[in-house]
Length: 86
View 1 (cartoon, rainbow, N blue to C red):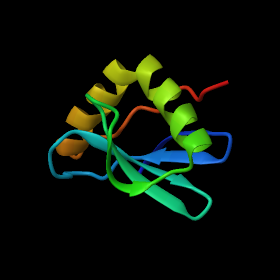
View 2 (cartoon, rainbow, N blue to C red; view 1 turned 180 degrees about the horizontal axis):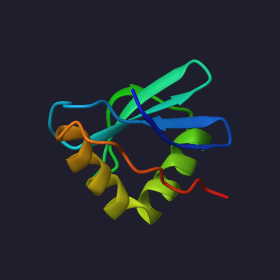
View 3 (cartoon, rainbow, N blue to C red; view 1 turned 60 degrees about the vertical axis):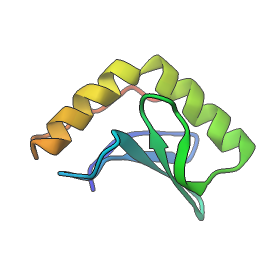
């Protein structure tokens, strides 16, 4: 699964040819979650409040880029890295 960003120990990835709705995968320590791009709701899994806050802040800033990567992933094309949260 390609990694598209990494910040503060949080790893953001997308699967190729993944199922709808558009989403991304997050890993933080032993925590895992799938986050919807449009609503930023957790679709599956869980994150600590701090990690979820950081992911939400980052995804809000990069929602258009996440959607572009989603389209690329569905087409099994190379994904673009997205700037980390600083």
